[in-house]
Image (cartoon, rainbow, N blue to C red; front, side, top):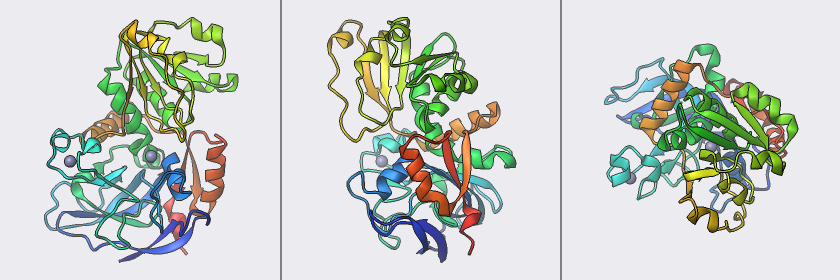
Length: 350
Ligand SMILES: [Zn+2]
Ligand SMILES: [Zn+2]
């Protein structure tokens, strides 16, 4: 079947309307009418070929919310009309040790990304959620339990939400723990909300005084301006976990110095150029770690969505029609968005 989409034919062209082909739903597939799609920094990096290996035409989008239009004969978990989500993955090998543990994001054979991964469908690679429909195996579809009026703001949970939720859970954020969140962007603002909701003492690190009030409004117990050495010094040796969401290359030593013994600095942003090599001393003296974390598995993504529905957590968003996508990318590059753009897919109508 053909559907309307928004995508790019090459890295130096703006995104434009296009018609794409979706496969006919197979026995295990769910056909989804997309209502909203969040705009992630990965979309921008991929479309503009800032990371190696972009396949064109490229239709990005992996923060997808919609409703079920039809289901294959073997589908048991979804029915027509259900409100559902699709995140960063649409398949994995399903038999390696990671997949068997529900950690498909660490699939040893490589999972299938929602866009820009090789696949059998035309044009030979996956196409994402800036489109009217998507067809996905039911095992990679999520149930959405938020009320209808919140659905646009739920979309960013599928990537930004789970990318911060997974490490917070893995390193056991909760009452009695002191958690830092570096960077107050799409990921960071979700990290602040989630760490706060888990009951941890939450400290937001920002680069500017102007974001301090916003950090507190989002749920931070304290906000620290990272360029102010005296403010940083007050928190030395005190954090159980610092979740670093900053995408740009920066000095990590400023944060390892703030960890307790056995504390962890977890990186979830992928910098275009490497961070300066960290000092080893603070790691050895204090058994501190620098770690990384990638999105979350399907079961954990469902757990995160249910947690957010129960606590009333959504992303802070700016809704926009698809034709605004290029100017939205430009604003994202300037850090000028509070805190996530979400495309109204109804705007793809002719
Ligand atoms: Zn993303
Ligand atoms: Zn696997």
